[in-house]
Length: 144
Image (cartoon, rainbow, N blue to C red; front, side, top):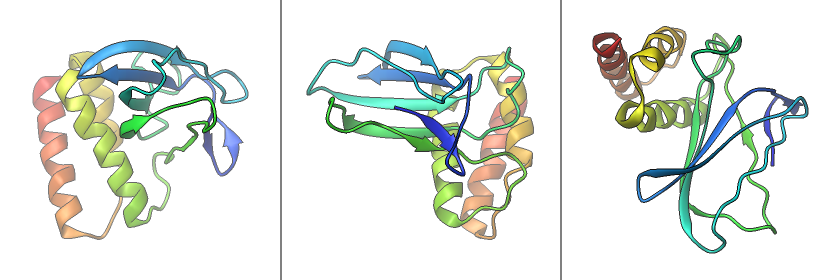
């Protein structure tokens, strides 16, 4: 399993696995973008890919979340992350906003500081997505 952008691996991306809203496993990607996480086979989980406020890449990438997935050894779970400040399409924006929405429920003020900054660099043309982005920025700004 890997975290990648433009098919190049991304190191030090936090990979968090949740079951029923509870964190059950955490890992970080290596220099090849690979990670390994113990996930109960056949169980429904949510997997989040994000940076961590204490790392040097904290503001470089937008998060991604795969909700309600059953992971097995036959299907690796790779994600293509959106780099901050890069042009995006609607699908990439929705993916990043979903990652921030998920984080809004569980993360603290340290995360909120980098999230508000990263969100300011997310560009898209949809008024609906812009409204969601503004609400998330307000949430993380107030929390930080």
